[in-house]
Image (cartoon, rainbow, N blue to C red):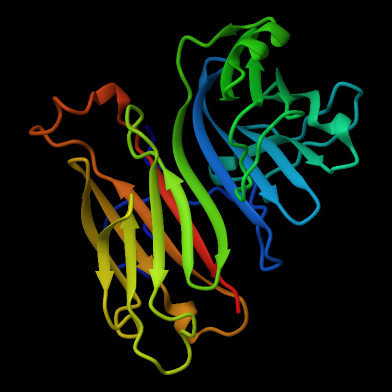
Length: 311
């Protein structure tokens, strides 16, 4: 995989970490929950980044899919332009073509559909069925849905558990090379406890991640402790957060080493709605553990968690 990665300037470590994709960023200070998933997929003979963003507010769920390319805007099947470059040309002159879907409760038809756009002159179809999708408090569906990205009669990316329905509807075969999740970026909102899930190895199970503060009043001059739990077990304990608001620590999750970085400066010294940034970056398996972790299952994954503190 290409080295997409640069460590945020707030951390002193020289390690390389994923840059957050500029496209598909749906959550802002408005309080809209969002999760952005970046996959690497083989499309039209090239390895490309596919960015899928799910967002949620009180009234709607939103979905957007964008694909890295060297040429920009696409058109849907009735000829309307809807693709948009990711902040113009990206790194190396690249831009993204995208499709967006807004699912409102009174627009049932939007939950089932298809759009087509061009990426470097190649037709890409995005096909989805979210009519029976089950949601929790997360923007991303839990089950009973599919989102398929089709290129050259191959399903190059397939999300959801209704895989047979997706293949039947698209009439396409599975890609010979599975798409790989390389980055997850999530915005969560809470007073003192922030929750998410992440899979740090393709062959592993999803892990529950919890970040908790001893006080919801971080700016009240009180001594604050912070704990990061993985599957309910304490992995990182930071005492006197007001003095240690930036740092990193290496933890072990099922014998896989994961670097954890945090920057809670704005929690303590910011005003209004503010966020802390947490980064979870697995290390490649060591020779001692390579027999337990199939090298083909290891992906250069990174989790960015934006924990927004609300009053």
